[in-house]
Image (tube, rainbow, N blue to C red; front, side, top):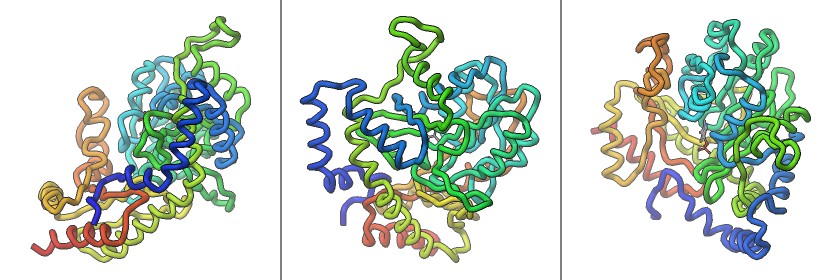
Length: 376
Ligand SMILES: *Cc1c(COP(=O)(O)O)cnc(C)c1O
């Protein structure tokens, strides 16, 4: 049996090596390292795949979020609401830009931003909501769009973990994660569902004017060459990464299917376990399983991880600390106990290996090891 990894990029690469190597060599031979045809080619493929008018490539997912907020014209002092249970980048850019991050609790089953908590957090200063499609499943976008409409707010989707997931509206129409709000953001960090071989990211929108502004902001706020009408940033996807992404995008749905197959295997092993709750499926979204996350009960989680580590089964905690308890983000508005769902999840969740190359032998080893822990 191959050694089990949280994410196995090596085995995945072996299967697509000739295509990847050729794509990378083409870029090197062309020496069009920045904004070359590979970037344009990938951008167009992604626009088609997502069914969105504009994809603006950039340097990483964090930049994508920052650029989106800058291009929307959100001002220092404005409040931006996001989920308390996410990777730090979401809140980081809000704070960096001088906005006020307002965090809200999540749904205990889907782990995604709770619409009622969002409603309660809205003030006259609120300008935007950043729903995060956590672990590969979309947040309740019917509710988000409704709230945004009622209060005239922007929706910035953080789709860093959910590229390729379909959202299914109450009326049955389907849209890809990241293409529903005013603007969507994604990351191509290697371990993401569509990962490159370095850093990368992209911003999506159907709004022509906003797309223009996003392109200005990622390029030093430049409107005409060497004329800078706005303060911008330098955020580019390089051509080698775009070439890798083009090859992998063609397999994204196949990769999502492999992740779902692994998730089903886990589900079947843990479904009726008294100490483990399998991840709920939100009926309005397909799941692309960026992570497979169990909620434990009456379990010494550290002992479980230690037990698994001894069996060479990796496991991770995404995320151990809610945003409002992170040292850098401590805020007198918030105290321990204010976000009971997030706080409970931070203490009880555990994520198992999840990637495109898990075989049945490895899955059996992982599930047997977890189940064995509860028998001793
Ligand atoms: C990975 C991630 C980001 C940041 O992406 P980078 O490319 O690492 O900057 C932002 N938000 C979420 C939810 C993420 O998972």
